[in-house]
Amino acid sequence: MSSVRSIHPLVGFLAIIWVMTALYIGSLLSALLLTLILLLYLISSQPLESTRRLTILYLWLVLPPLIVLTIVYGPIDALNITLRLFILASVFTSTLQLMKPTELIYISSRLGIPPLAALTIPIIIRLADYMNYTISETLVALKGRGLSGRKLLTSLPIPLTAHIIISSAQMAEAIAQKQYKNHTKYTSKPTIKTIDILITTYIIANTIIILIQTP
Amino acid sequence: MSRIILEDVWYKNIVRGVSMKAENGVTAIIGPNGSGKTTILRIIVGALKPDKGRVVVPSRIGSSWQNPYYTFTKAEVIEEFIEIYGDKGRAEELLKTYNLESLKNSYTFKLSMGQARLISILIAISWDPEALVVDEPTNGLGVREKRMVEDLLKNIKIPVVIASHDLDFVLRVADYVYVLSNGRVVAGGPTLDVFYSSILSVLGFPEPYAVLVGRKLGRRLRSIE
Ligand SMILES: Nc1ncnc2c1ncn2[C@@H]1O[C@H](COP(=O)(O)OP(=O)(O)OP(=O)(O)O)[C@@H](O)[C@H]1O
Ligand SMILES: [Mg+2]
Image (cartoon, rainbow over all chains, first blue to last red; front, side, top):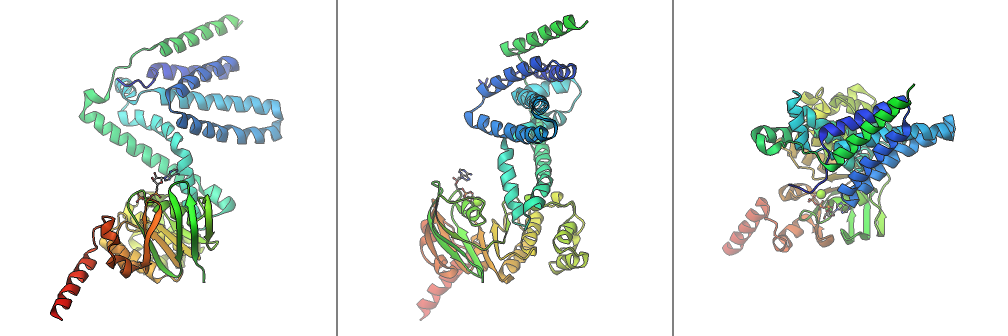
């Protein structure tokens, strides 16, 4: 078995659902804490270079809204909204990156979801890592057809999105085909690890606390 | 007349002291995988800043890259050209000129690799740039499409720089060739001179068919004399 760290897919989905619920009912702090645990676990499981790219991606995600919102709503509200944005983005990226594709297929096949569908989303998220590179490639290509300034920036999402969707679908297809041919090799029964127990306990404990506090 | 000049250009350890010049006509960069061809093209278009050296280029450079789909911003092929010309008639005329009417309403992102490359190159020259850069122009192209790209590159009256592994194509289309190895220019000159020198076989390139035949014929002629 590989030593790559991972979480149980069901725990991953539980974490996503719980963080969204926590945000919904206003438990910002406990949502943030769980997100940070997941992020730390992710960072410790991947090479430094990936972390560096992930950080750049988050800066892109967080800084522009922070600036715009500060101008519109003032710093306190801006921070509040951006923090929520950050939590949502992190919980999705970290859980989906921490799920093993083979384990995900195992679960999805039991839920009646075809592997192709189950794989497309995590692959899209994984591609985020290589987005920076793709963005610069696309910018160069668009400049090469004479676009510049505002036109360049507004056109950028078109080839970028097409590329991400096409390559995600292609990758998912390739992996799904492999797994159909070799069913036993490409799925694996998810194992429960310490991190899974930790996250589940955290969620249960927090849910209880919130329930008690609710009049 | 615009031109492209690189003088003692360095980039990390990928490009090491490259000097080259491209004027009207086609200049080809050839070399093994990873020798730095694409990196040089990216320096020419300004996507990479060299650590050292002088780069003189015109301000409007058209380009088409290894992934041709990045060029597309519209759903249908014809829309791309309408966008550039601002005129439906001219766009249709262009496709007609290149016998590409059948692709008129094709979805750009669903074109085959070869078709996409052809359209991407056409888009890159359609906005009237002062120079053109094309990475791997014949990758994935069929015989007919190769001929089209050949005609296209030969007939436009601006400096064209290509990077290619397709020596047969380079022999047909290029006026000038630079041979790159490990980020250094190891040979450069008029196409025929470079192809007839021993540099290609030293680097392990297969001789283009035409050169092989030419060499054999030359030997035969000499022996008859
Ligand atoms: N952004 C980058 N940062 C660091 N190294 C890079 C970068 N881009 C390319 N390289 C490296 O630089 C070297 C030259 O790459 P380049 O793409 O210029 O080669 P090439 O001659 O175009 O090769 P090919 O024939 O395969 O297209 C390779 O070893 C590649 O791994
Ligand atoms: Mg290349």
